[in-house]
Image (cartoon, rainbow, N blue to C red; front, side, top):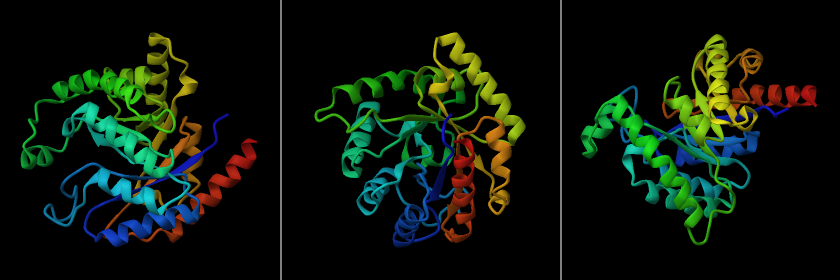
Length: 263
């Protein structure tokens, strides 16, 4: 039985870098398992032109100031970087961190990022096709790099599309990340299990990650509902408008107790 894990997504908007770095260090000290950020160029809410920082350079810095937590983007946009280059970036940050990188990736969706930085936006379908084409390139480059990563870098795929995204998860991912209430989570997990059967993958090999909505951050018992729906990794998010995380220690206590109960 998988242990329950906790992630903290530090959304790099509306604050300074020192505050973001301090929050990553605090998350490790509190006992979180993973520190995530996200891969955008502009804030997703609040002032659309507010302060914001880039994903992978930040992860490299987080790798230097932490020792235990895994680190990764939730998620990298497939459209923003050549896939071989992305694999090389992940390998390099994996070495900086001592083997703690998770390569989170998705097809992309935030139009402003694309338009402001000159990437063709395409359609949801074309972006998914690009992701499907690039995943094997990333995997192949990770195998060919010298020196190689310090471990088999886990690939996390974010998204809940049942016809394409969850099939790609079954084919390529070590972790699936989605959003939704327990009923939605259970449904998506069942769809993913069916895709695993179709492609010949053991569904138990894929860790199931779910975002915890902010209005449930003070209710760790909500985690029981998500775990019952098939989640193993629960991720809470904070952004620069309020980076206080002391109250999330209740989730760490909840995780520890549930893992003891599960043996």
